[in-house]
Length: 324
Image 1: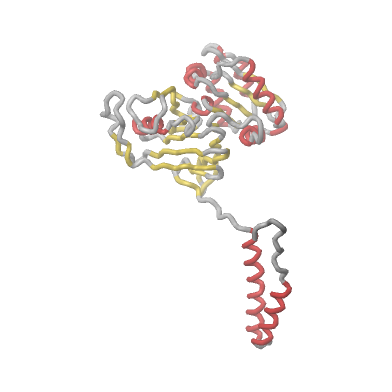
Image 2: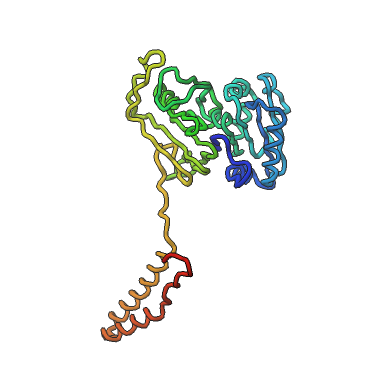
């Protein structure tokens, strides 16, 4: 679960509720990794209260503050026993510098592979991809040296994730990264929005499918056929990025990361219209049966249709002050 930051903690809590449910609901044992945060025990207390309110059985802090801490067998065992892992926001470069390439980082990857739900918000979202935005400025135009990249955990391979995407105008820096590394899929997640990646069987093969929930959108840059001058742009010059395929995915959208294609959505049916069509189809079937049996004259059919219309109640009259 890749959360773009600033997830709703006060009202619907849609994203956090889905995380707890996917982690086992009343049986959920959630390990919170707050390493990226500059806050102390407060950040643990907040998520402890939130997850328990949604029904989690247990919430445990796993907070390495150095790479030596990330070798601690006690912390690693906690992750081995978790049904859900949640990485908080903060400084993603700090999170990567302490966790990536350590036994604790390996334990997160191993947990993910055996089916444990791994979620992260803001910094905790960025570290889930193979390549991670370390830092960089805002702006819509991709420019050389606009940002730098560090190694992520690689839960999502061949990708780079950015967060607070629309709210902090991070289009340019994500475009810069995919222009320099066209093998990567760029994924930008808005605030209070989550990209949920699940394994699904498609035509007999295993695919990674991304599903969007929340208030904003997930933006995907596919640079597979890009034309760019990133390899020769100097200093902070604007970069040419032509032929990048853009996908803007609101809640309810699904995207096949394996084939890099949109998953078609089902057609929404108007229930009132469907009911009217059902009634009309019933009348037409009766008329067809009568005609085929040659047991009714046209006059009898007209009388039957007239009775059907009379038996259908007229629409309710608008109440006083209502607009018809």
